[in-house]
Image 1 (cartoon, rainbow, N blue to C red):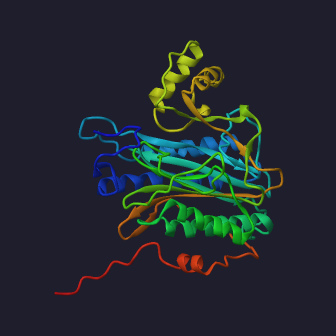
Image 2: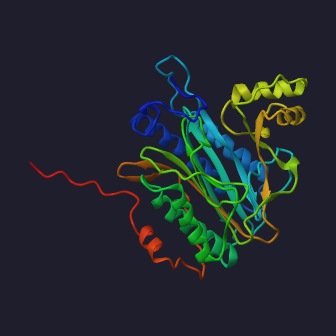
Image 3: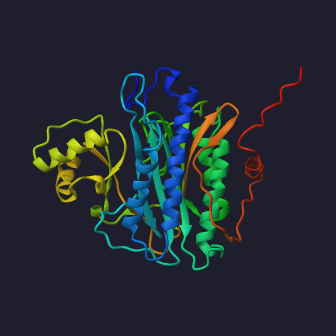
Length: 376
């Protein structure tokens, strides 16, 4: 029995203990990495943000179509495709910007562009995010505050991924991220969570809360073998307290599977039917709906009865620099496997990590070398 959309797993069939599951995670990662590469290549001055989001989603679908086309042992088609719709957030936009096709915003030289997306194969999810500055000279390094915050985020990610090992606690991972941010003089963005992921569950209940607040706290938990994490690093030169500016910009939602309600409006019924058929557990963009105007009407009633979770577009203050890097991490016996990547462009920052313990931690390899078997 598969735990479709559930955060509970009773056995090892759907965990990394099963090599077939590891293979599906890695194929999902390959798809996500290719989609990210496609969007990065197209992210140039003059490119429309909505076109980049559509490109990312189309690439995920096209790449997913190449794999696992035979039916499973029960005779069912293997579900695969978008696990998180492509978002392209610019400058002080922190996350979740996935505008509709009629949006006219274009990228400009010098902007910091954050790309975030995800793919899945049979419910096994790989997510990835990267930040790039649109430079006139592709070989020139990023400088100034944007370089500082990007270098801090990359360094925090390298520390966190090495802390994310069996026996460590979620609080220890968060502390490593906070210490790096402190050394670089930047702030961890509130509300960002590193979620454990399971089959068809992109936001599991086990989390690393990067920055606690009176409104948001997380119980201490221990990292365990064979878990999968979406390591999500978001740092800012500003206060790290992003806010929604316009509710109308929200285009990314996820079905609240624990809620039910008999909708009244026809537009709401049509929208919800599409969601339950096409996106029963994964986040989706309104851009994917067959008729966006009607969907816009329907989403109001769905939200008023808590049938959907929203992913609002959040902003730091104008002029703040933001960096976002995300990787999918498999907690394996011989070390962590980072299956999605956050390769970055050249950076020129005068700041560096000073904490000796974290420097020593980052110097360690992610995986232990396999010992050679002695010759007989």
